[in-house]
Length: 583
Image (cartoon, rainbow, N blue to C red; front, side):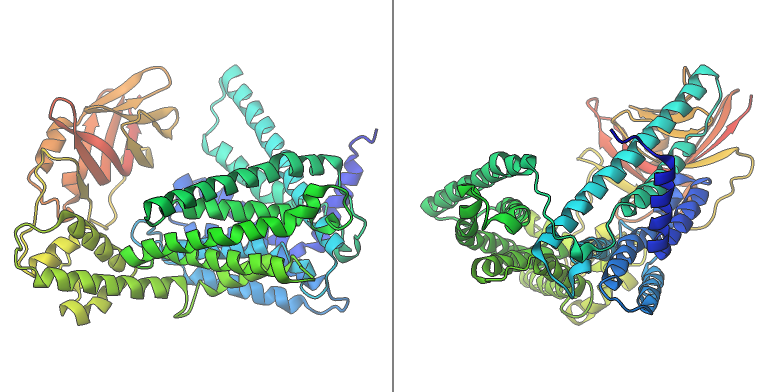
């Protein structure tokens, strides 16, 4: 039995650094930077410095894929490709806006798609110019093994160190800042996980053609994956028969099951492809083309479900990507049915190209979705304008119009509404929140604004003040997000805050340091216009002090609901808390 060798570990680590120097330098620098930024406030990584975090994560897969691509060529001097990738990543960083996920999801959706494209590129990067099915199978197997090994190493290391820190904290009464656990997580995920992952790839990827197919894989495919695929196919055909009998369009949810089925079939195809012609198992030999012939009729169901959603509500980014996936599944199925060569590298390659193209241009997800929703807005606005009874509008149509308006404003398309309504609604109603803007657009058409009574459902207030506030005289500042589920928010030095019905509690590990009643505070909000953000920060500020602590809570947003006794209570809220310990 071969034991762990520290020298072998160092040799592999050094070899990985020599092979992937740019990637590992990128990972080390950005991980250390994020560790430093987390020292001030963990939330800053996801909000204030989210541009750095997104660029750092995106660069890892793209740089690894670039190295795999370069290694296909014997000649040197292709370092400039890495320079181009780094410059593109820097350009991407400068295209990202300040954190505003709630009001503008577009940059984050684009980043997520590019992240998926980068990972898809790893599935074909070493085989763009050369092809061997057995070498490709071994490469994918090595990749899965590397993922499992790196996750195991970094996970065990993280949990081991965490347990040691907890032991020190509770056995020796040594206070360890909660941020240390997150910083340790960053180090393990960023540096250790990536380094271990890159340490086990053979360099001559394209020449590793000796197939290592274990019996356990065969059992897994024959008795788990293929029966699951058969179960999905049976369910889908039964549902197809049901809707044919009832003569109705399919539900949108069926799309996800068809995607899951197609994904499962493709995974099975990747596993058995190199040996299906020589393997003695009848299941392996008959899997293709039978499975794909059975999948083809289900694609009609898939497109019908997509058509139903698009015809009713127009195209949005999720529906656009659903169409892209449908086209990909159709093309991949036809390719696997009729191609003689069946080079599986083309499947992730095609999906990556489609994903990349969807992130920009007039044909991309964001442009197509915006044009579609502008058309939907125009149809609904025209219908509202022509309606004779403006006192009792259809609540379903009203909610949909509100949703479309909010979508367009959040996607910076308010100016595009000028040709339809004659003005830019954001410029005209500067003090109205995005959620309430549709009310004022309809008001201009003669519709009354339906203000919700305080005794109905829930209401929401937002802090419109963007100026800095004075934190002098306090020991700590911490951003918070809490709700009625009883979960506490850690502040600092053993202090936490939690929402408890009509009170906010400031607690230590074994007692309540301060109880803050909220009823009087909420009472003063009843006179505020719920259709507009609050410009006076003091109206959304709550302060309480006693002999132990001095606390100021500044709400950014606060949602209220009615409890069983008919009183308003905080449902959920976000903001910042300032805390001073007196003794």
